[in-house]
Image 1 (tube, rainbow, N blue to C red):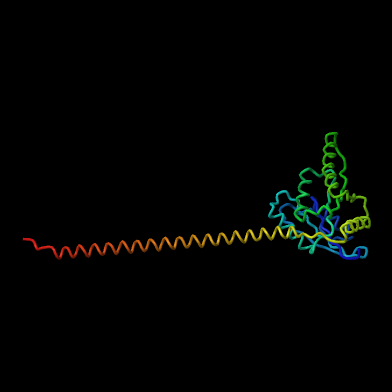
Image 2 (cartoon, rainbow, N blue to C red):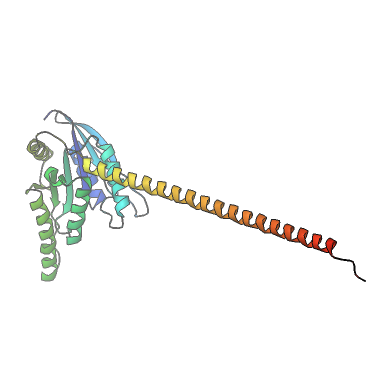
Length: 257
């Protein structure tokens, strides 16, 4: 394919996904140094011509933070979507085969689903083998973690490559295969946009409800104050009438002997 291709990089290790991005573009486009947790990270975009076609990469080093709330995740996904508008052609998931837990599997599915329920059809899993160290128990844990990653690979129709042995050209061919499987099209994130729009409308409705409630409360207070003033005026008027009547009675009373 000669048209521009947009690729989203996803993974737990920000340094590793940045290295993959630099590998694809064949230049130092992304910083591969690990940043401290206190530094807030955002999606980055970089691009360049590789083997005759222009490739745009969106590096998302922050979506697998388990501390993210649903609202924060949607905000960061929206940021990524804006950088790869009108939509990505391919997702590249970068993981170590021995460092992928059941929680990672669930988080990956949740993140991809935040883009679109169809994201898996546009996804390639890039793995990097974890060196085996330790006893049999450690070996079993390594195999178990690899099993969760294999389940994810199965969901992605077995589209996987080992980043430690694949060449740049082979990876681009794999990306072209995914684009071809999807008819040359990109993933539209319409459902995400609709979901965000609904939330925005709900927020607007909520604000409107709050505004109306405040107005109703103010109106009620005003009515009560008016009633209080009217009652006070009526009480004062009644007192004045009584005092006037008493005065008349006193003036009409017969003089004493």
